[in-house]
Amino acid sequence: MKEVFLDALVDSIKILPFLFITYLAMGFLEKVTSEKSKNLIKKADRIGPLWGSLIGVIPQCGFSAAASYFYIGRVITLGTLISIYMATSDEMLPILISEQVPPGVIIRILSAKVVIGMITGFATELLFGWMVRHHKVPEGFSLDVDGSCACCATSVVIDAVRRAVKVCAFIFVISLIIGTCINLIGEGALSSVFFSIPVLGEAVAGLVGLIPNCAASVVITQLYLDGIIGPGAMMSGLLVSAGVGLLVLFKENSRMKENLWITVLLYGASVLWGCIITVLGITF
Image (cartoon, rainbow, N blue to C red; front, top):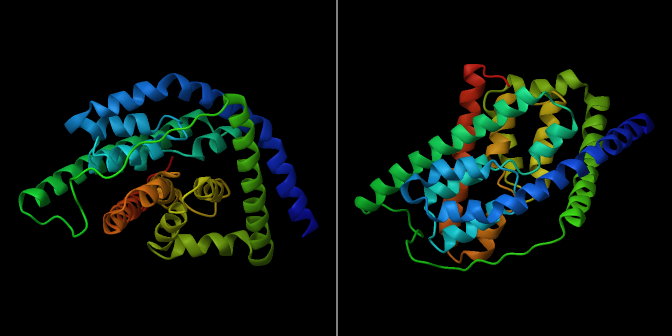
């Protein structure tokens, strides 16, 4: 156990500088692109899922939250919201960079999230449009405005330090748990649980992805890098992991049934895409 603890601690400390540099770069990028991205989304109209998926993948920590506010105020459509949620990378990108994953792999993962978010967003638009025309909108949904937008800002450097330390702590805890499980069960036995039972890995990863903070994407990414889960399960968890977007939606939108429908849609679509990736044998 002492060896597992030391390995987890050393591994976490080693990536702390990389995390800080990555978050610092992301912070400046967000400062430059944030308002432009939001304005573009507001003007997107019917092609919202296209811009939503492309802009959602840009590492902006508050964009999924902003998207929730936009949806509550009916500035964007349901399809655009879903595309942003699914494309959002949350803490995945910093971890992949800090773990020195090959750039080609990172680009393929991000590209997959963009394409999947775009397709799902447009499919949602078509489905919801059909339901509206035929008066079959699920109970609890409304086209009325309900809510307002609120924003906050902190120093880029302070925010980079805070996020780097926070994620480093998450990685330490997760590495400790994974290391302990491997020590007790064995890596082969642990990974076989997810690989041998159809849909289980994707469904469980999707549930983990629903955790409304950076812990979700940290857990999913780390499990994938450690070989515990496969590409399909990884993608299921990361597609549904919309950062604090869902948390803001439930907090600010008074229509709980609508929030639940959106969550079910996001989870179901994410698990389905994860299963498709597994069945097709797609790797990154």
